[in-house]
Image (tube, rainbow, N blue to C red; front, side, top):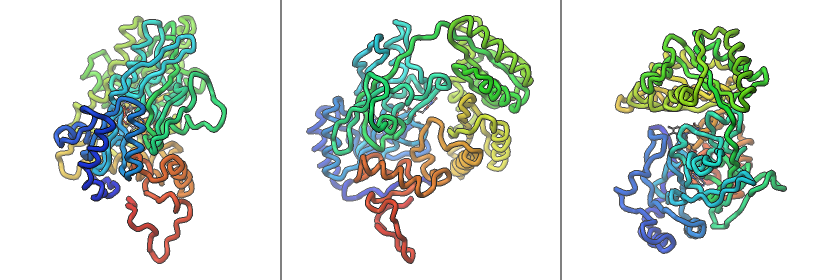
Length: 497
Ligand SMILES: Cc1cc2nc3c(=O)[nH]c(=O)nc-3n(C[C@H](O)[C@H](O)[C@H](O)COP(=O)(O)OP(=O)(O)OC[C@H]3O[C@@H](n4cnc5c(N)ncnc54)[C@H](O)[C@@H]3O)c2cc1C
C-alpha cells in the first residue's frame, strides 16, 4: 500500500473514551461502537486494497442527532468521515484512525411519494434500488442505476454523483436530485432545492452533488421519479474488432440517437461474463455492444433498425434483438454481473474509472493493451460506451509481493492516458483517496486552490472527510498565497501527501 494519509492526531486518540462517552449521550443505546471487533466491518469500503479501523463508529437515526454529533466534534476538534453503505470504489468512506465514522445506515425511511409532483423524498440510507421498488407498482422508477444499486445508498449516490447504464439518456444523480437537507460540520442544518425545478440563487445543490462527503452530511434527499417507458428492447451486437465497435458507438450518437443504455465489453470480459451467467454471449468476437432503446413501441422498432444498420456498416458479425422482457434481462445479466464474473479470473482486481471522448476509444484500448504487457497484468474492460466512461478491471494477486503496487501504477497510467486523450480522471466513482494524488495531472495549482476555497467556506477547520480528493492539505488561511522560502514550508506540521 503506497497511499499516504494525514498523520493521526495522538492527542485525539488519547481522548477516545471521553469522546465515546460524549457521543453516547447524543446517540444512546447501540448508536456508538467502540469495541475493536465491532469496528472491523467498517475498516474498508469497496476499495478494499486500503484498510484502517476508525476510532469510533456512530450510527445516528435523526437529523438532530447528526447535527449534535457534528457540532460536538466541531467544538472538540474531532474529524468525521461520513459513510453510507460503504460500496465506494475510490476509498471515499475509508476511515481515519483519529476520526469518527458517521454511518448513515439507519436513515432507511421513504418519507413521501408524490406522483403528481413526480418526486420521492427519502432518507439517505435508503438504497438506490429501494426507491424504484417503492414506486414501481404505480409504473414509476428512479433512473440512475449503478450496478451496485441493490446495496449503495442514495446519500452515497449524491456524494459521488453516481451513474449507471441508463444515465446516458436520463442523466446522472445530479440530473435527478431536486433537493437535499444537509448538516454542516458545525451542526447547522441547511435545505437546498426541494420539490420544484431550479431554485433561484447560486447552485449550491449542484455543488453538493459529487462533493464526496467533504462539504456536509446529507440527511434527506428529494429525487425525481419517472414513468417507466412503454417499451424497452435491447440489441446484442458482436464485432470482430474493438475499432468497429467504437466507430459504431460514435456513429449511433452522432446520428442523433440517444439509447437508454449503450455498454461495451472486451473479449476477456465477455468470456468471464458468459462463464458466470451463461446467457449465450458470442465468444468468437473481440467486442460486444449492448444497446437498449426505450420509448413508444413504434419509435423503438424504428431506432432498432437504425442501430442495426449502423452496426452492419461498421462490421458487426452477430446481432440479436430481444423479443421479450426475459431476453432483454438476459442480455443485461452478463454486463450487470461483469464485476463478480471478472473476480473469478484472478484473486483480486482493481476497478478503474476514467472518461474519454468516445472517438478515442480504439486508441485508448490499444494503449491499454500495451500497458498490460508492460506491467505483466491482465485487464478486462467493461464500460459505459455511450458516455465514454471506461471501467478497466486490472487483474492481480495481492498475496504476490509487488503485484498491488504494479496494479496501482498500471491504474494510474490508465487515468493519465484518459487525461492525455482529452478525458477526465473519473466518470462516476469519485476521486476519494484513489485518484487524489493524480488531481494535479488534470488541474493546475490555481484550479485546485479554488476548489479548496470552497471546502474552506463549508468546513474551515477541515474536519469533514480530510485526506480525500485534495492531494495536499492547506490551512484555509494560506490558500493561494503559499510562499516557500529556502525550502521552508509554512505550517510544516500539516501533512503534505
Ligand atoms: C460492485 C460495485 C459496482 C458499482 N457500480 C457502480 C456504477 O455502476 N456506477 C457508479 O456510479 N458507482 C458504482 N459503484 C460505486 C458505489 O456503489 C457508488 O459510488 C455509490 O454511490 C456509493 O454509495 P454508498 O452508499 O456505498 O457510499 P459510501 O461508499 O459509504 O460512501 C461514498 C462517499 O459518499 C460519502 N457519503 C456517504 N453517505 C453520505 C451522506 N449521507 N452525506 C454525505 N456524504 C456521504 C462518503 O463520505 C464517501 O465519500 C459500484 C460499487 C461496487 C462495489
